[in-house]
Length: 429
Ligand SMILES: *Cc1c(COP(=O)(O)O)cnc(C)c1O
View 1 (cartoon, rainbow, N blue to C red):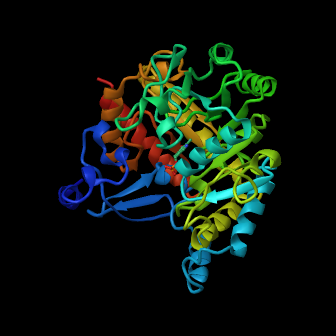
View 2: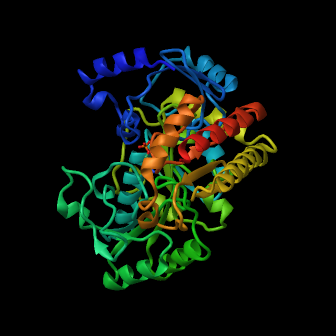
């Protein structure tokens, strides 16, 4: 397998783009390789500039739940294209997408469109602060909510601690407003609330963590947080940028029957074009300008092409049996992989929820970021490379989710299973 042209492009890219990439994980640093430059993708397959074809499980990091270049989505965009690209004025398709989102997530009374997941979480937190008149927020170590200043904070190893920034350039004063709790640790959340009574505006979390590998919420975790928020007047924000329309039709809130006060969305709702959204309870969302006094705006927000791609995608998800199909494909593949790992006696944990799953090379349960960090990243690196050679494109990091799409065929899954068997066999020694 040659990567000559990818390597050439990477050298050239580094002359004009920081690190040669426009988002850091794409650089393949944690797997010790140069990134592949992609030429095209269709269905379950992605093709690099050297004409190597892979079965893709990254799916543009989540959006491509229908597979790449779904004909219905492409056709909808083509049709819209002739009418112009952006008007900076309201259009009907924005209402249609908002209405469809509301039917799928009935807890959202009002929805505001933005351009990315980062914008969605940043804005939702501003609204929660404006609504409560409080400044502090609680987030969980290992949960990723985009790169806004006060969200680029994770933890001093699981303990109750004031946040320190993960990135240079984030003022310590901003990070101090972010309190860090351990995922799946309700006592930790209680302790923070007791330490800062009446000061916490919002608790934000990925209801299924997908940015530290895949970690599901333990029994009572989400409902416990829900009750604490009710008692303390704290706004509960589910960041469903990844899990929305991924773990089930109505996201994690539907799957676990826990209703947040606000929800942030992204990835799938843009169908591959840049879209984010945040929404929630009427009384909270009424704070948003021009109804209320929390300012938030966007020149390209609600862009007609992006709305069209999102709308066409969500409509496909509403076909009957969609989630049953994609869920059973995921379960099948995960079970096959488990079987291979058991036979190879390699320590692992595999966790899956709906159409996303994750593999840790580790010999203990993984319920928090601290646990996840103990996994064998060296082994993942070898595994990633072998899978690539076998024609399977996985996330180039041990701490990312793997995404199934509707376009993955039975034969794709069998090929993936066979590639997995060969790769595990190679790295076993
Ligand atoms: C991807 C992601 C974001 C950030 O979205 P961008 O569109 O990359 O800004 C936020 N939250 C979660 C849970 C995500 O997975």
